[in-house]
Length: 345
Image (cartoon, rainbow, N blue to C red; front, side, top):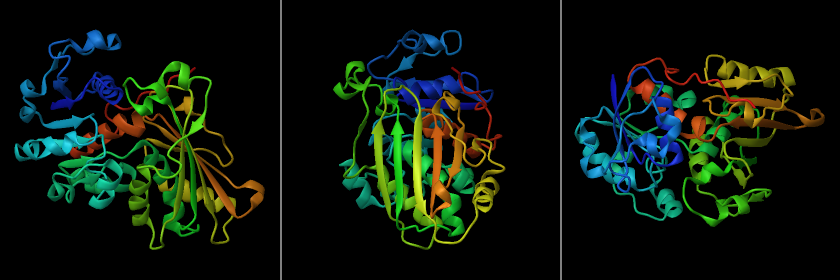
């Protein structure tokens, strides 16, 4: 059994990890930390876990995280890099769901996250936790920077096209929407029901911190310079993410060949579903699952390809992806504990 610790178990990604681990056959929950809720049973805060999770929250000081095999950080940015050196020195593997180990460019990290990076020597060895594009490095890693939710959709949506060299990499456009849970479990005016419901808005139009992460990773897929115009939006739903990606074709290629690029790229991927050409994937078809669905369009058979990508932002966009990485790091079947069927309606 893998002894698992979770730092920051009271937020949405934390409870999503707990939901997954409640049904994971190879995991033993060792510690779930919360300074404020020290001693409170986890199932008291989250009644959905009654009868499934019998552990109580413990303060970080008493959690004995160095006795775990792996520790997940479901915390704000900056927490993991402060604690990772001690854990790694004790032989504990670390998976960070925040941004501390996503960006190799330290200057970009410090610009976008407004804090100095405290362990750049560890950053150099961190593996980027997108299994479909970085599986072998994840298997060998002891430190994972889990991808952002938006970057997951953009990378998997553009990867086959960039690798094949059939699009103009310098002019990519990503029009992306996320449910309110992407903002986290905190008291904030913008995410109050009366503010977010019956409303639709863009944010981060002049620049978003997921842009440098996405550009850094897309740049590994092509020798061409990548240019990305990324606009995120907040939609009035709890879970779900829909990214509409645009790219201009740079080579003469027919629709069947375009579809084949994606089907060949993801034919062995258990969590990427390439739908028939011209399909319209819906966010509800991935709700509460680790599945990501993709469909291609080519309006008027012109020079623009449109890629539609949907996922659950809390699962494949966060906690489910982190568990995928854990499974790979410990030599388990990658799908272990993650074969939840999406919830409908």
